[in-house]
Image (cartoon, rainbow, N blue to C red; front, side, top):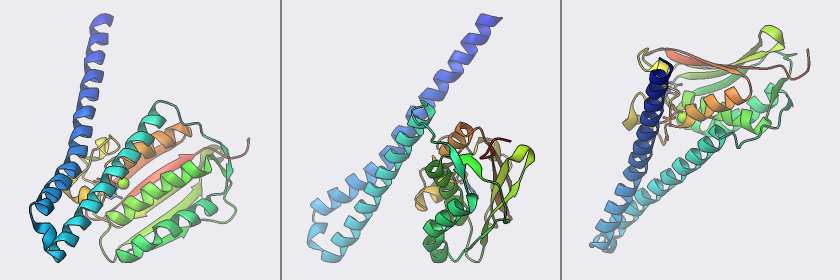
Length: 244
Ligand SMILES: Nc1ncnc2c1ncn2[C@@H]1O[C@H](COP(=O)(O)OP(=O)(O)O)[C@@H](O)[C@H]1O
Ligand SMILES: [Mg+2]
């Protein structure tokens, strides 16, 4: 029984790894194919047509940026997964981190005509976190919320005290939502509801996988609730910043 179980588990892990390598190759291949195609067209004569040349080079540029983002996210994810990332835990005030995160995403929210706001009660206890990594978690979540919310929508970051001195942060949006069948797999590497749309919006499909690992490394909890067509709320619960 035991042996059989082990073999099954081994096969499953091998399967996961094979799928991951196939996914990485595919994700890298897509921008590379576009870059190759446009450069070929440029070399084949389009270089002489000023307007075309500029337009094609802009596309090439965007795809190289995309390749860079993919490699950054892949490196980050594998370092976190391998436990190579050491968290510098300290008591962190959420309002400070949330303010800095909203300032970073504000231009994108404005461009997409999405209202962006925070609702933090005063007197919220500090959380135990690595300030930069907590910012990374929230940047990913607020970025997603804005990205998957159509014009006229709203994104709100709120927080409230939870049991045992812990604090629950919630990023809520009024966006497209995630279908119930996709929800259980949404934090898997490269899993997206709509691959084409995600790529179009510059996504690597690795954001939520990074978020999940970082939240777990903080001994925190991640929960996602969503209603298609109405919106999504992501809850992150973090340990208290001071001994109870
Ligand atoms: N707030 C949200 N609203 C709707 N869908 C979301 C939201 N956040 C994440 N998703 C879905 O989960 C997928 C994975 O998210 P993520 O790992 O951040 O990838 P990316 O942002 O690169 O698309 C997204 O492609 C999208 O389909
Ligand atoms: Mg994302």
